[in-house]
Amino acid sequence: MVASVVVVLLVAWGALVAAKVWSAYRHDQRGLAVLTTVRSNLDPSTLTASTTERSLRSAAGEFSAAHADLSGPLVAPATWLPVFGRQLRSARSLSSAAQQVATIGSTFLVQVHDILDQPHGAGPERVQSLRHLSALSATAVHQLYAVDTGPGQALVGPLARKHDQFVSQLVDARNRLATAAGVSAVVATILQGPQTYLVLASNNAEMRSGSGAFLEVGTADTSDGTIHLGVFGPSGAQALAPGQVTVVGDLQRNWGWLEPGVDWRNLGLTPQFDVNAALASRMWAARTGQHVDGVLSVDVAGLRQILTATGPVQAGGVTIDSGNVEQYILHDQYAGLSNDSAGNAARADSLGLIAHEVLRQLQGQSTELRTLASAVAGAVAGRHLMVWSAAPAAQAAWVASGASGGLTPRSLGVAVINRGGNKLDQFLHVSVRLDTRRVGNSTAVTMTTKLANQTPDGQAPFIAGPFPGLPLVYGDYSGLIADNLPGAATDISMAGAGSLTAEGAEGPTWLVAAPVLVHQGSSSTVVVRFRLPGTHGSMTIVPSARIPAEEWSYQGAHVTDERPVTFSW
Image 1 (cartoon, helix red, strand yellow):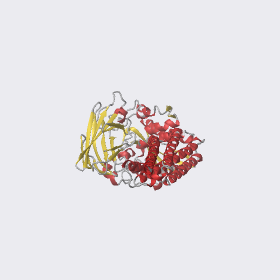
Image 2 (cartoon, helix red, strand yellow):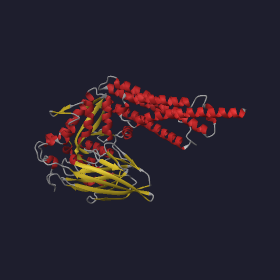
Image 3 (cartoon, helix red, strand yellow):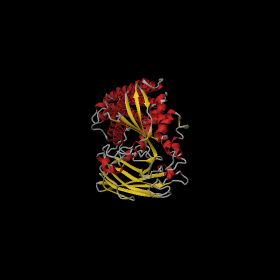
Image 4 (tube, one colour):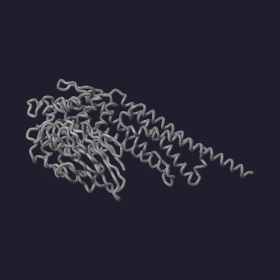
């Protein structure tokens, strides 16, 4: 009789424990769903929205309820059971850890909102706000390091995966906040000054590798939170004598035949902005005697995104805003120009003048910071805004933030470099299809790039050519297709283009490049094949900065390269 009562009580207790565990599971799932939504939208406009802070508070409430379900006196005895008890303790620790992370996140965002909502302007106020943001980020990182995720060994499959995923995401959150702290501190130091940055304005109507051609150049000096902009001028008028600046390494081996240390317009032959910028700083010093602390590049799309925050500017008697800046710089400013037009000198200043006015307005007014943060993040993601610093600590912050324009061993990129002296990149449609298949213990990759020249009739000679002295006709797109492949690539071949002009290492990647000629209304297909070790892996697209963006497809997925995209297999 007693045994029967004990059995009944044990069964009842087990049922109640199961109910509590089920309730905790449902709370955890709802909390995780909220965190997943927040994590999938980690751009500055979302993070600075009040709805994100409310979502994190909601998630913290769900995790708190789950922890309470697993911590009451009814459940406590079960934590000492063999095997099951370990799973229960781990689940309880994860719920507690998730609650802490969500609470830290919501508190951090409330503090960030307080800073963003305060009146601010140019000068010392900006420096103070940036230093405050850096301190808040660093404090949140310290708090996240104190989060205990509980036992991670000897767990059942689903719980083990959940534990490992949470730990990975926690590490990612720490790294992101550490990056935010570093970047905020670096920008504050730059604005505090005194520092001088070389500013390269690039035009996407005439593309290089990973950027437009650097057609305008000027400087920006900082002091006490204020930016003082110098005069921008055509880079073509600032050429150096051959040998005045020495080019070495991969850049010289792959691209020395185009003299990147002589003509500023050939600085973008490699997508490695750190390489281009370091060379640009030496070229500027050789040309002017002035040494700079860093280099900043902004292109037409970057100006468009920043204009969404600053509002319209006046440049050369024209009102420029986010709706017309691309059309004006890429096309309209060239209307009626021939390659020997006397008005070309005045035209050459338009890109630099607009960049000058945008940057001047940006530093001279109280800009809505949420919109500005979103605009800058979008520009950085697409390589429309890149920064290099001569100071190692500052450069490390740019690398961590993705603003350095560098490559990794898993980078994959397709660039089409304009060699026709025209502005036809706006009419060149670039699409890439990626295919992978297993071959033994390796993966065979095929990358098929289609170039479609959609140049319409009636364009100005300055846009559609032909450039004097080149064996081209109206609308001919003459260029180089330059593909950066992962560093582990082997058995590389390229078909559909001319003879290779470059083949070998380019930073942490492998480069193959060859000439292409696409007539008006025609298309060309270039196929690159290579192998990677192993049957599983991933590659990350390097944005080309083209306008319009390149279109990529892989296993039924279709994306543009407006931001880095990772393909896994």
